[in-house]
Length: 66
Image (cartoon, rainbow, N blue to C red; front, side, top):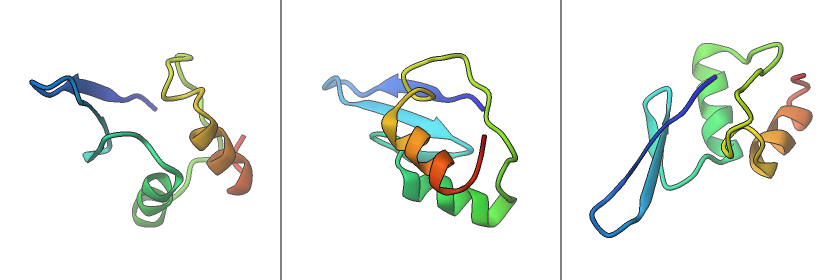
C-alpha cells in the first residue's frame, strides 16, 4: 500500500489512495475501498505518516487485518 500526496497553492495537503482523494486518509475511505476491491489480509507499508496513522491502525485492527 502506498499513497501519493501533493499540496494545493494555499498549502492544503491532498493524499491519494487507489484514486480516493481527500485531505487525509480515514477509516471510511479504507472501508469503501475494501468493499469494492476486497480487504487485504495484511498491510505492509514504508512507515510513512499515512501508514502509521492512528486512523489506519484502528481501521486495520477493527477489520481484522494484520
